[in-house]
Image 1: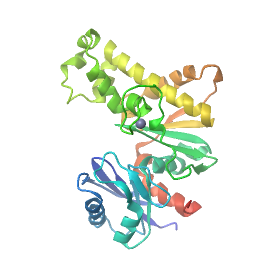
Image 2: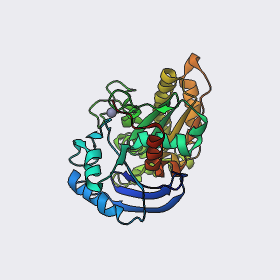
Image 3: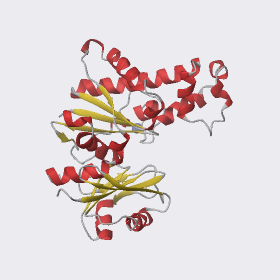
Length: 314
Ligand SMILES: [Zn+2]
């Protein structure tokens, strides 16, 4: 096992990343290709097969996917990809490659990667949140990934924290994904039509060009409107994190994703807000940022974990 070479794919809404790695997480090769997102499952699986030919000598294949994945490998629904409703992606890939393929939800695999390749090594109980365009999550409990009855557990992004709040891609309203994600930062700026926004430099940026980074730099420059938008963002996230802490009593909360990259103080602010939000149920739970490579290595971690503990079947 020590010399196994793993080929891992991470399918995203815009690109597929392929990574060739050893089981120690030493990256031997890394390539990206634009996702064939509108052409349906057959085209995407063909794309992954031909992409795999760009990598040499691998023993194991693994793939992480932006959809809830059942124990048997069925993708429930992938909101960012066309035609992926109840498709057994695992079976389709295994037929295509003619060998076993490890498959799981991307955030679940990232949670495993936090345990195997990041500071999660130290902990038996933690939750993971990935804050990007949307919000994904995963739970590591009693030293194992927690998948629940069907394999769909850990959808922290769809915890409702504001009744009758803004609509979410999942069909509900007021989910943390609709209030604390990267997309919700820009939406909040665009939808605010009051005087306060007009006094901000953000009002000079056309809505279709506005990115979260603009709001973060606004706060750095002391722009009150940008500061308000991000304070709200942190406030909503802190409600979600406090809920997780109250339910699970974890040793740590890990946070990753693009929104984090904009500001090193983000985690500290979130930790402070969470402490406040916990009220009288206060306790010390560190909020820790994951490394970029932890997210990259998610498919590799998934394969290593499954080899170590076996495939869970329910
Ligand atoms: Zn939702």
